[in-house]
Structures are given as structure tokens and as C-alpha cells.
Image 1 (tube, rainbow, N blue to C red):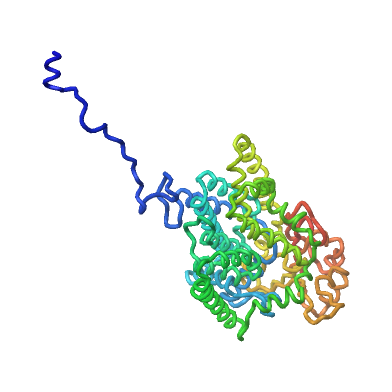
Image 2: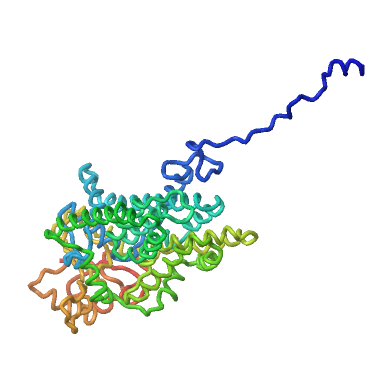
Length: 529
């Protein structure tokens, strides 16, 4: 046997080694983003499951926000769009003075026009369709933020940034509203996706500058957020001449030119609304007419409320984040400082920096190992409560009452005359009624003549409601068929109501925290002849 083995070496090892398993390379054309395994990335930079979940989540978000926030979500968008499309409505003083661009309302006017041409311009669709469109834009920006982080960081970090973005109660509260701040935030997130952050593979100067320009056109204060980022980009850019001549200049000229042409067409004269905006709000400080706050308000109230439960994670994330995100932190700080120098302050003004903050919150959660699960439960619990309460309960009466007023249109009551005895712009107007019944409200335009003793109509009314009613609705003057007001006014005008044969027709809950001229309920009184 040994002799056979030597002569016929059946078990001799081959002259070459064992085959080595080859590593399979993913196709660069069909592979997923960041080279990681998973489903194929879609055309917008994320796999279809992320896109589908984002869309469904924001549509649910849209349905579960049934309250009002600030007057601008109607009076600077839908009311203007309604007037453009249906040729009746009311324009506030900002539009008569040329402070606002028609670009954003024109976006909704185009939606209204399509509904009108399809003979589907019911009041319900006029109300919900713009919000659905805004919800879809919010979902698109969520996906873009996730896609950016997938290319910059590990999948784990990207998931937690995405989680923080979706779990933010203030984003939930704002992102489906028809506010210029909302569209500014959408453009800011998408522009960040194309911004040349260190390590980014999606940078595109022309695209991000176009989006920034649109944000500034819609809301000029967007320049505050982007100025640090633009300066940083300029000094980091190797070919500065190309950046200025082939990207910045064409974008600026094109967007400003289109905006100026649109505004001049609707105002009926050549106008540059952004100069008027700076003149009134910065030089003359007209915005302070609507309230002023101490310089530290954003640090002591604004940021803690807007970030909410995310605040400790944001602080922790700023200590852990890579150096490339320092420019975003700089933009956040600069924005808050500049806004702090202005007298008039609102929570929504700092909404566009919230996605920047979520990047740092996601970094924090990604680093928390043993504490991650409690942190997630904490964020879900303490964001869910304010999101649902502010979206379904707080400040809903001023919207519910408009559905009641709209019923007057269904009765074909041409004699209906509704007067809102409330702080000016408390409710939407014709965009939520969609029929040309006579409606009026207490006026409150700021003084533009420099009269130090100026008092607006709303202040005159609240100083002596009975006197104002008796002088305004004298015997020869037409008397409203319906009065709408907050319940805390009832005791001051009950004698007028009785003398003119008014009785309560409806009452709607508004808020658990009445303050000043805003009551707990909204009353509708109807006059009986």
C-alpha cells in the first residue's frame, strides 16, 4: 500500500493553495447610500421605507394638529392666496405698505386655482390641502436630513438624528402650518443637505445657494441663520471667483429678479419689499408695537421651550460632536444673539435652527449606551404630551368658531353681518369661510406717522367696550347679526347684548390658560329681530 501511494499520489496536496473566498463588492450604481447594506436608496437619497414612514408620519402629524398658533399662519399666506384666487378677502397693513413678498402666498394661490378649475374648491379642501402640501414638504426635509447624516456619520448616528427630528414636539406643532417660518425651515434643511460640510458627498453650491435665496425671499430674517455659514463657505472655498461669479451672482440675480417681478405685478408698481421690510422692522422697529421682551428671553424661555426635553441632549451633543459641526453651532449661537437684540421676540422665530440642534441631540443619543433606552422613553413621553395637547386642545376655539360661521353661507343668508370683538387677527377670515358674507374685526395697525399718542381700534375698544359699541352701532348704523368674542368680555358688554336682543348661539372651548384679553371660551351671539 505504501508503494502504491508513492507511485500514485492520490492524496498529495495540490500545487496551489485552497481557494480564497472573494469579498463581494456592491455595485456603485445600485448600492445603498454610504456603502452600507440595506434596501436600495431612492432618488431622494434614502430607502423607500424611510420615505414612506416620513410621509405617513407627517400626514398623521397634519391630522393631529387642529389648533391655531399665531395669526401669520393665515393672514400672511392663506388669506392673501384666497384674495388672489377668488378676488375677495382682506389684506393686512403689511401688504398695503409693501412689506411682504407674494411668492409664498402665490404658492397656495396656485393650489387654490387648481381646486377651483376642478370645481373642488370647497372650504374643507381650501383649509386642508395647503396643510397636506406643507406636511409633505416637511416629510421631504426630514428625509433629506436623514440622508445627509447617513453620508456624514454612521447609520447609528443617522437614525438617532432622524429620531430626534421626528420626536421634537415643537417641530410637530409647527411643521404642517402655513407659516413663512415653516417654509423657511424646510428650505434650510434641504439647503444644509447640499451645503459643503466637511466630508459631505452631496455638496452643491448652486443648489444650496438657490434654496437659501428662496428662504430669504420668503422670510428675509433667514439671512441671519445663513450669514455665518455663507462666510465660512467663502473662506474655505479654493476657487472664490468661481463661487461668486458662477454660483452666488446668478442665483441672487435670478431669484431676486423673479421675486421683484412678481411683487411689482401684484403691487402695481416697481417695488423691492425686502428694503421695506428692513426699513419698518429694523430701522423704525415697528415690530415692537406687537410686544417686546427682555434681551435674555430666548436664553431663559425661547430655547428651553422650543427644545423642550431635548435641551440636555443638545448640550451634551455639543461637547461630543465632530469639529465639522462647529459651524452649525456657530450659526445657532449667532442667530440667538441677533434675535436677542430685537425687541419683539417669538418662539417661532428660532424654529429654523431647531434641525441644527437635532444634529447635536442625535450625536448625544448615539453615545449613550447604557442610558440610551431611558433617554428614548424620556424623550418620547415628554414630547408626546405637549405635542398632543398643543395640537388638539390648546387654542382651538378660534378655528372651531369659523366652522360655525361658515354655516351662514350654507343658509344663503345674504344679510349676515359678523363682527369679531377680539384681539385683532385672532381668527382666520375668508380662507376658512369661502363666501363673501360681511365680516369685520377690530383693527390694530401700527402707527406709521410718528404720532406718539396713537391708539389702535382694538385698544380703544378694550378701554371701554360699552362706549365703543354704543358709538359704533348707533341707531342709524347697521348692527351685526352675529358677534364673536371671548367669554371674559361678556360681563362688560351684557347690557348691549340685552338691549339689542342678542342671545348665545354657540360656545367653543379655546384654552385652559386664559390670559389678558384671551378667554377660556369663544362665544357666538346672534341677534333676533
